[in-house]
Length: 65
Image (tube, rainbow, N blue to C red; front, side, top):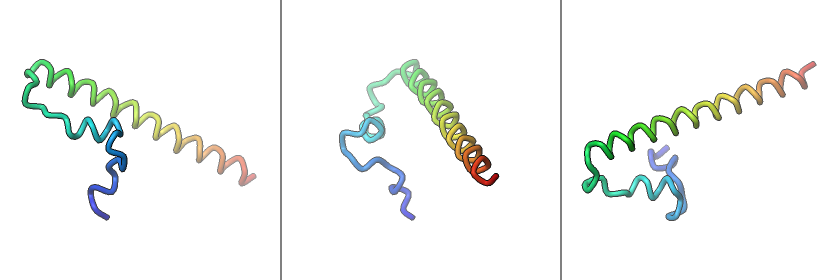
């Protein structure tokens, strides 16, 4: 599996735009804010993923009865 397999396929995808954004004009403060926002988004995404895993496990347990 290629590492690019996880990247979005559409050029207008927000993640694709984010990955292409030029960081050179950003100040240290702006870069720190960007990192904070990205960490918050990672936490939100991980929480959603955990919810999905738990939801699936609950449904599977329900139908195994």
